[in-house]
Image (cartoon, rainbow, N blue to C red; front, side):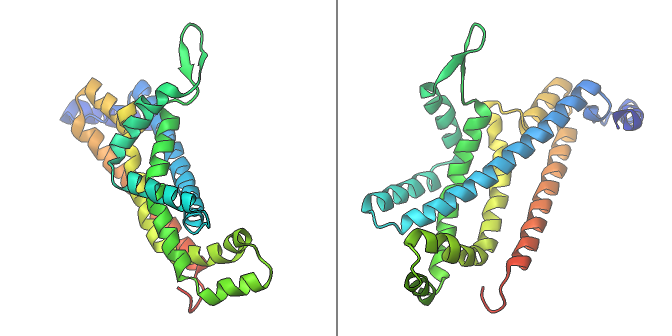
Length: 247
């Protein structure tokens, strides 16, 4: 792949000064491809775990335990009202000091690295918004549906999993779509703790080669493409799950 396009971009740089070095230099190309995969893994992990946090949190909001409800309310207020960058730095530099480590050949290596803390922090950040999104969807489910589930002998948890959540999920998909798109864009903050994703790697490349405009253009196109794919997938999923007369 690189052998096919490298002559064109190298010639472009020599003649015009437009330096897309990642498309003709093997080292920068390999670093760029690795960053694409790290960004993709980070985004997928955050999308999945933040959705799980939202589902579990919405259930906990309606729990019979007052302590659990208050704990969930505190979590939502904490993560919704503090900047995500501050949260990432807090998780990595503060909580990271209390995590177990192992001997990695002369130095101690924590079991949870920068990538892991980025996933944890961003998932909890977006999950706080997802909790409220799922709560709104649950409240949209008619009371008669819940009563029918109870009359059939469903426990509160089973009614939530098999009846209420599937209906609520359809209602809250548009709002969930917006929040997941915002989360995708927020993953760029992981560069602050040296996660080698696209933003961090692009910063390294333009620092080494002084080609800021070109790398910013690459970043712009990359994230437009990712957001477009996610929105297309979510909209398609929303249409397939739509129940006529129930939205």
